[in-house]
Length: 410
Image 1 (cartoon, rainbow, N blue to C red):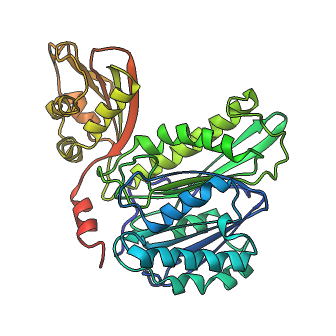
Image 2 (image 1 turned 90 degrees about the horizontal axis):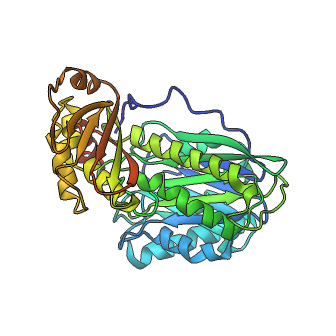
């Protein structure tokens, strides 16, 4: 299935600098796709620390469960990711496939099996042809360093229309460190921990427990604040690898002031990647930011925001460039969170439509309708209860989404 590049895509893949202690190789393993790479191997320097967040789906894939099992070890030497097959809902055979792949990677790289992490993305319920993957490992190890971040991002795509990456630099003490990330995701995007497959790499020296304490809130404010279609994947994984090659002084904990700039860079990379997933939402033509204020607390604001973002009626109205703001009122009401109908206000594109629970006097839909024609849509709602606030991001719902998902397995 050939997909046109999203109209919301960036002009080009960003220039991601080298991360010392990380090497990539990719190959066309023929897991499902023909004529394109579908397997990525990353090798890490000895002592690389790792953190991760994973789907809360009750039908989580075998690779997710194995990553969760190995994560407490705190170190990583390799990461293998395939596209085309999710190895989810595949029973004991799926677990055996994971073990087979991990063993092949560990043998080829020369490390403990517990230091190898893996992920699979694609069709759910189909047995994974793991020999296509494990058989490639000796050759991939020989090719390590021949692929870059863009190659790695392209190899893990499914219905993505472009590879996604982001980079920032930061200082820890007097040392400059780099934070790079890649992500895949376009559909089945409604996070419940993080979402899709996302991998962030840094040359900073940061212990695994500190990495975890930084990654979890970063994912909550980015990957956990986006939605395309309200569906949470079986395979959602976001991992953070720190090679330690920058040589900075090791921080004492997550709240060490020396980490302030690194946290800023990590949060920016995570949010950049999360936004790119929304911009590549299946069939998307509009990028939508929804800010909710006046809620009981920040969690309530986020739930109200996601209720608006996940509403098919809101999303299709935006796709049709229809300023039907009554659908926003509906979505706030169904969220189940406290909201004062008679204090509620709504703005679209910075233009106040409703205030104190009713349409503003002299409301003119013309500038709102003009805003609806743009690719960037801003919605703001105040629910009049307290000071809770949150912003979430989504895209519109078009015929393109139906076309892509009706033909996904072909």
